[in-house]
Length: 175
Image (tube, rainbow, N blue to C red; front, side):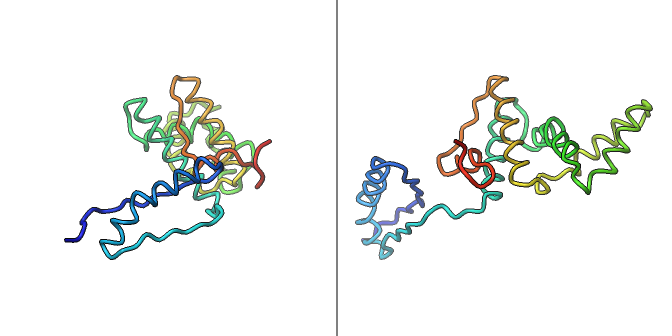
């Protein structure tokens, strides 16, 4: 009779001999069942090759979920909050081209105390995209979010396999 258990994929980030032991122990625990199912374990060993922007994005949405749970809201609401709080300022400071004229128009509306200011500013915030951030800008954005959440009593968890997405800058690990 075949074992019908479903093996969940596992990823091990190897930074120490202890983690090598955990990977080997996992294989020991599951190889017999996998063979009896006629589906032997497949082990791939590679250095981290994931595109930083994809890793940063995964970390970002993980953090949005953690903060939203802390706040009792949803990740999309918190996404808008953090874009307005930090990303818009980064884009304005760095004069990101596609937003340049709109930031200027919103500033004029604010200075004139125009009744449509808040509606236009909120609309711009919805249009601002994290995908327009460079790796360095997104790293700064993640740092701003992390510091803000810590200051407000929410420690954001960072899985080992995504730590590099937050700790690296300019393609090199932070010293």
